[in-house]
Amino acid sequence: MSHKGSPTHVEEERSEFGDVFSGTEAREAYVAADVGAIPVASPRRPESTQGIVRDTVGSTRGWGKGAVEPDKRKFRYDVTRARSSPTVRFGASKADRMDATAAGDLLHQIHEMFGIDKEDESRILAFDKALWFEHTINGASLLQPGRGVLTVGGMSFDIAPVKVLLGEEQRRFFRAYADDIADANREVLRDYDMYDAETVEKVGQLRQVAVERGLQRYPHLAHDSSDASVAISMEERIAIMQSKRLVIPTVNQVDALPAARSGL
View 1 (spheres, one colour):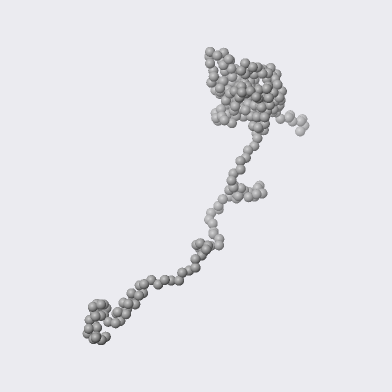
View 2: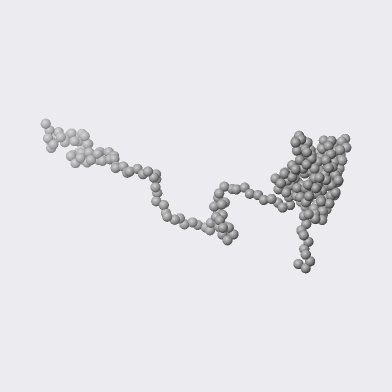
């Protein structure tokens, strides 16, 4: 049995820890280091039910001038909030033409007056095209005697009752259908057939009115309500405005403002 200080015990320590780390102190240091390498579980913090919370600064300082605020003198509501809300559609009626719904009611009344409201849609459409063409070649002046007729599918309809029904709303009524009238006139030009006397006559009448109004380049816009069209190009609109200034200098009496009193 070997003792701690005996040569045999020294050899055992030398074989286990080597010549450098020999002795009891070296072995104790090795054991202490080996034990310290084992991770020690730290106490767990209680989990939060509010997720990750970080400290935030109470107020942040901006930079620059930012957006221009609306003039609060003119608006008594939060304009910024209104602009950030879903957009609400808007619109307005133009004073020089009839509202689309009112014009549709009046056109349907014309159909009922002639008893064609229950006819086939193709006949009703042909009647409307005849009405648009009559307006193009004769205009919408109240001074027109209303002696013309509309010919639709072999039937003739007197235009005078239409003039009476429309009355002072005649010009505003046709302005509501300005683009539809232009489409009807395009169809007249497109259906031209030199062997068909009726189409030749219609195209000739349309071109005559167009030349008189200085609209020979755009005969489909020869009707005097064409300035109310919205589906036209900028060149077409310029031509219409030039035509109204140069060819139609007079103002319709219905649309004219009352004369100023003398001395005022």
